[in-house]
Length: 259
Image (cartoon, rainbow, N blue to C red):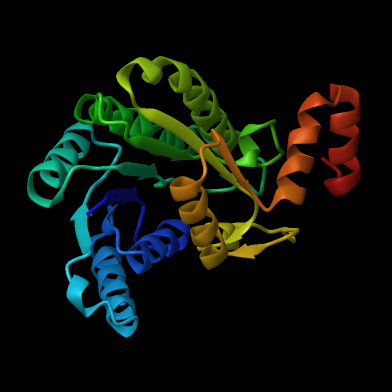
């Protein structure tokens, strides 16, 4: 039986993706730093599994409390999964901190938090996964964001963390080929989650977490493309902004929100 480990799997995209993999008879390990949310998510996933008449696969759902900003915690979690549950075929690095800076006030503590979770946490996961996945043709999939394509107002801390994940994924795509490890990056558009509810603006082409979960399952299991994006129209618009001269790019934001 194939196994996927999903960080930040207690809610949002991570939870919806876990549900989709379970519905397709994968063994799923979800982790989160929040034990209460993790236990609640497990109950919901087990109930969903039973309702889908997968009674022969009652043990598809596994949970481990893991703070990815702790290197030791990450190492222990991956060792535990490999030893007690199964070899990790796909690692979906989804856990992420998000706190939009609506007042545009530079707060170093916010930057430090997002760097610790989104950048260092991703690096800690990759560091351990490279050792256990070597020569197994497994996959590391990193969930980034179109906000990493270019700097956005009010998103300095989050933006640099997502840009770092994008750049890291591109580099490791080449470097991990010799280890026989597949590296892929996922850049969703606006998805309706606890995190995006913090946004103070109307989000175009907003999609549900369930939509994202189905897209991620489909592309991770059936596709081979490096970058997984959805919905296409809004993400390709963000991609287009990467080639705009600064004068035009800044002018657009001035018109959109008087930035």
